[in-house]
Length: 81
Image (cartoon, rainbow, N blue to C red; front, side):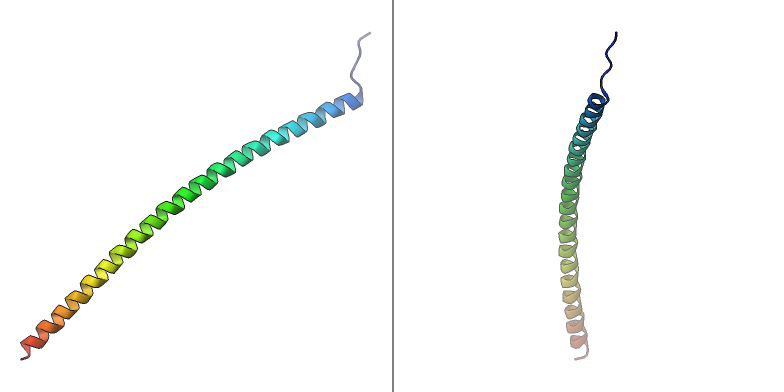
């Protein structure tokens, strides 16, 4: 006569298998979250570098405009003399 596993043994196996699946999925989720976090941090650093470059460019252009304005005012003032 062939012995069949008891219902409790089958339930325990299903529970263990489910828990194993949950643990494996949790590890996968954690790995994915870590990779996404790393990618976001890298992208944030790239954006910060771009922002600093744009701010520097803006400041340089503003300075050039101010110098041009002063030169124009000075030239205009001299031409009125």
